[in-house]
Length: 372
Image (cartoon, rainbow, N blue to C red; front, side, top):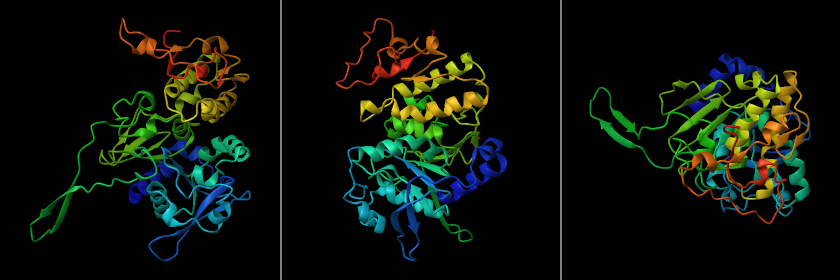
C-alpha cells in the first residue's frame, strides 16, 4: 500500500503542473499534531505536540466517528497524558493504520481531529474549526477511511485474498487473487447519491464533513471496500485498475479547470450550485454543523473568484450577495429525484435554528437548482 502511494505521489509531484503549483513546500502546521517516533520495536511511540507555529509536512486522517468514543481522544482530563504518550492500546484500528501508513510514507506528523482538537471544549473547537480549511489544504496527503464505519474497521482490507500455489519447480511461489471491482472511480456524484461506489460499503462518502475534507485536500488516498484509490487535481488512479489513471474525475481544487473559469457571476453561481447540490444530501451528527462543515469550501471558492477578478460579495448563510437571485432558486432534491405521482416528503424542522428559511441550509435534506 505504501509503495503504491509513494509511486503515485512521486508521479504527481513530478509530472502534474496543477499539483506542483498547489503544494506549499513548507506549510504552517496545525495547532497540534501527533508526533510519530520510531522506537526500534514493532510499534512507534505516538504523542500529542503543540506546533508553536512550526512549518513542515504532515498527513491528515478523515474518518467516520460512528458510535465509537475511544479512550485515546484528547480532553481536558487526558491532555497531559497524551502530550507524554498516547497509549498504543487506546488507539482504535483506523488510527493505528493511519500511524503505520504515515510512518511508511516517511512522515513524522499526523493530524487526527479527535486527538488534535480538545473534545468537550467549545472554545478550542471554535478556534480549530476556523482553521480547518488550512489544515486540509496544507496537508501532504489526506488518508480517507472511506470503507470504515468507525475506528474499529481500520484502513486496510482485513480479509485474506485467495491464494493458488505455483507447482512449477523453476518458479515456485503463490499467486494471490481478489475480486475485481465493478466501479471505475469515485466521482463527485458518488458523494451524494452513492453512484457505483456502493455507499453501504463506503460510508465515509455519505458524511458532510468528509466532503469538505476531501475537496480541500490537494491529495487524498481512499481506503475503499475495493482497494486503495489515489486522487489529485489532475485525476484518479487505483490499485484495482492495474495503476491506470482515470480521466474525467477532476476534483474541486484550487488548481482545477472548473475554478480557473470563475471570472463572472454566472460561472461562480454554477460552481457553488454544483457544490451545494452534492453536499446538501450528506449526513451530519449535529444539524448545527450544516453551515460550518462547508465554511472552508466557501472561503476557498471566494478566494478563487477573487484571484480571477470576480468578487462574490458577502457570504449569507450559504448564499452569496452578488449571486443571491440565482442562489435562492433552490428546490428539494426529491422534486427531481422522485417519479411522477410520488409524494414529496419534506423533513420536519428540527428544534435548533440552522439558517433562515430562504437558505438551502435550512432544509435538512438534499436540494437542487436543476431547471432554475
